[in-house]
Image (tube, rainbow, N blue to C red; front, side, top):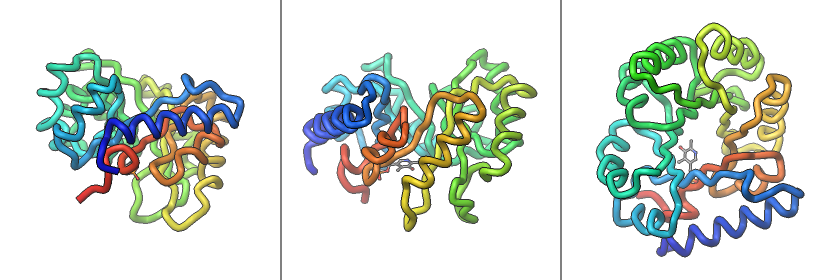
Length: 221
Ligand SMILES: *Cc1c(COP(=O)(O)O)cnc(C)c1O
């Protein structure tokens, strides 16, 4: 678990074979390397290995870490995968390339507004709370169609996908299936689902993007 570069190679290999097993092309699946909590010493080897898609869950932390790394690797794509407060929208739109956690109307409106101001039409994912967990962010499954329509038609957001974090104690595949179903009936192509413990399962259920932290960077303090 100690060498991020070696871990990255192993994860990429597992993605490849999971894709193959499902009759899918590995190139259809993006790996978002979740570097939250980790410092430059662990992130740089992954950049040196050629990886460019990263995920962070806090705006402040990403703002502290990524400008310096980006100066050396300008083609990095940074995904916001954590909850976004409306008072951080301005910074988030300036810093990130993809926002995966659009989960309520107030945030969606603020994002649409700010993207216009900054002239940055960022692709976004709608986060769905597939397990309807009280403590978890995300739109409830029964409200998803309405919310997706609002984001696309009323606010003009560039909705490219759906994202979910299944309940820890439940069979993830049921949640992956639900996410796929909601995406399909809304004509949405991308599915961000699967983490270190279940990304191969997620690929079997149609993930186009997996968010993997621990399996690449090691355990978080
Ligand atoms: C931290 C995090 C991950 C990565 O989790 P690992 O189990 O470390 O792979 C994925 N998605 C989100 C939203 C996260 O916050």
